Amino acid sequence: QSFKNSKIMPLITITTNVACDAGQKAQLASQVNQEVTNTHSGTPASHIHVHIMGSEFLSFGGDASSPCATVTIKCAAQLLNGGARKSLVERIVPLLQSNLGCSPERTTTFFHEVPVEAIAVGTNIMVFSK
Image (cartoon, rainbow, N blue to C red; front, side):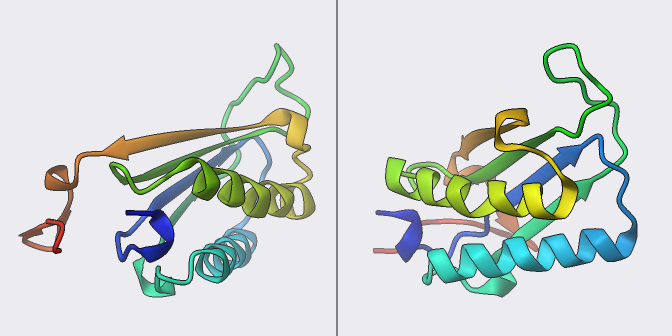
C-alpha cells in the first residue's frame, strides 16, 4: 500500500531557528497542507497535521545564526515508500526556503514510520481495512 492511496494522517513537524509569528506559521502550514494534498491525492487536507516550531535554538554544522530547519514526517508504517518520501521532500523543502530562508543544504528531513496500532484518532485505534 502506498502513501498516495492512504487516508492515514501524517504529522509533519517543522523546527527552525528562524523567528516566525503566528501568521507566518499559519501561511506555511497551509502551503504544506496544500502541497501534500496535491501530491498525495488520497490524503484529504483535513487528515494532515502540521506543527511548526519557530525561534528554536537549532545549530547546523556548528552555525546557529544562519537559517536552518529540520522536518519530521510521521506516518503509519509502510505508507511512506521511496517515491512518496522523495515527492514530500521536493514539495516541502522549497517552501521552507521561500518562507523562512532555509536553504536546502541546511534542511534535514527525518521519516518515522509508526505501527498503525500505535495510532489513535479520538478514542479509536487505527487499523488497516482490506
